[in-house]
Amino acid sequence: MSVKPDRWIHEMVLKHDMINPFEEKQVRNGNISYGLSSYGYDMRLSDDFKIFSPPHDTVLDPKKLPLEYFHDYKGPECIIPPHNFILGKSIEYFKIPRNVLTLCTGKSTYARCGIFLNVTPFEPEWEGFVTISIANTGSNPAKLYAGEGIAQVIFFTSDENCAISYADRKGKYQAQKDIKPPDV
Image (cartoon, rainbow, N blue to C red; front, top):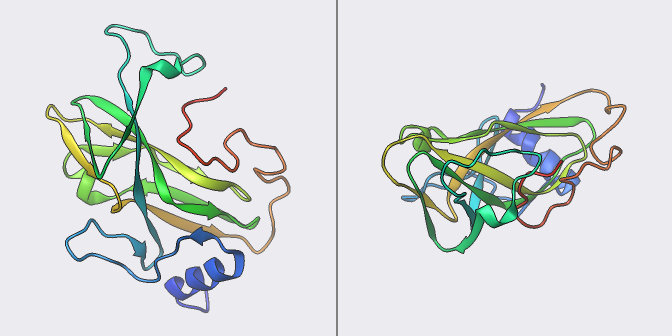
């Protein structure tokens, strides 16, 4: 790579309108950091959540997960019950170019409190707000902060475009605007 990684990401974002809104530098100021980092972008958590609360002793089937197991919540903070998870979404809308693949992973600040995210790729030509599964592995309730960093997106680029993109396959999570529970 002949350009510094953070400059390369910045140029790619501007060229493809890849992240909107886009924070051009790391922001901390008492927040869990977000914005452009050395090799990626730390996305923020919106204030929209779906709290998971199925009936006790229910067997969960990802092919048939009833929507009524999720309760909508909106607020500046969200508490995840012990040994449970919630769904959230990014503030940023992503448009991934055809020659780029990303990997999204949780931030260590939350991991040090037992809060983990599902590691997921954003495939070439996927676009939308990111639905984020956030699990509290601990025995105590855990707090999330809307408007602050939740995950880092790491970018991988190819010299060639992929043969079949997520858009070509008409992926089921394409251009999602809201938090989207599992869909088969």
